[in-house]
Image (tube, rainbow, N blue to C red; front, side, top):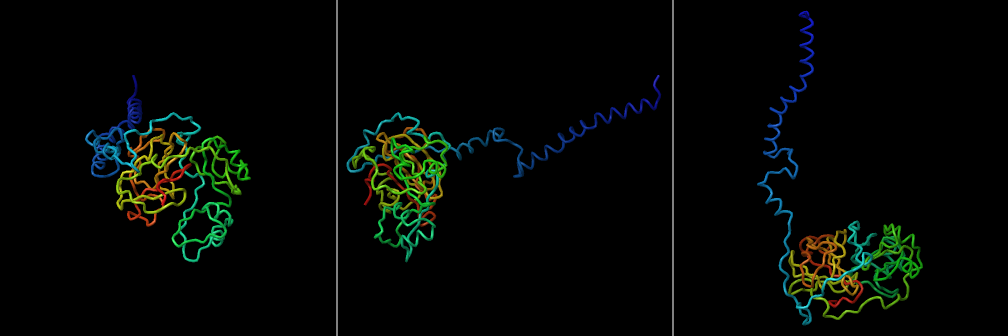
Length: 343
């Protein structure tokens, strides 16, 4: 028979052993309801997204889902939308940007500059620490060219040249044409493989020398009626031809529909500090169109789009002049062919 002292010791031991469970029970009964009440009053919530009350689901869906409108019928120079360009099949090398790891249209971004009073190509070269030829080559200027007040220029981040990648261009060819180093081009543009260049890319060629001419015959000429206007009527041109082979369109409001100027495959979407939100479309003839400063994007990389399909809406993301809502427009580039809307 155990002594009274032994029984007391045993009882205390059991109490110590079960005491933590009592604490947990008290927390569950009193503390958690208080936290739940706070979360309903706007305090920190303990719910994960998938645990949110069913009543909040419609609101979540309405905020995160965009429904493209029915494309409007738009024609250019009498061209009809009745026979849009069909979808195409391309190789991974050409489409490329579907890989999704590319988050910049120009891997080593250039700077957009507006000419001010007293600027000259030489003064700009000194200001930005690049060679005079770099300024001239990137803006298709000659040594005798004079700058106009308000003129838009592109400034490369390093002395060298800028190359528009065309179908079938290889990195070794580009290096040889510009008398540059393949390794330096890869390093500066963040390329891990020489095969990571795609039609429509703009590559900075450090130390490159602009060739007098490039091999021809790699691009398919397009008729003026191949493209439709990328925004609805009256589709006003607010800035004529400027880098890179671009024309700006705006009807003076934000949120205008932006259309695919021709059928093709969405090559890349993303954001840059200059171009803002953008969409790039690869067309069957190897030409690439670029739509910049969008307020929102409706297209997905790798998806097929038809001529006239809404791919986004006009906005002022990135760098626009003027900044803010007054600068709403779409920056429309044609890479690899003439821009039919240039004036």
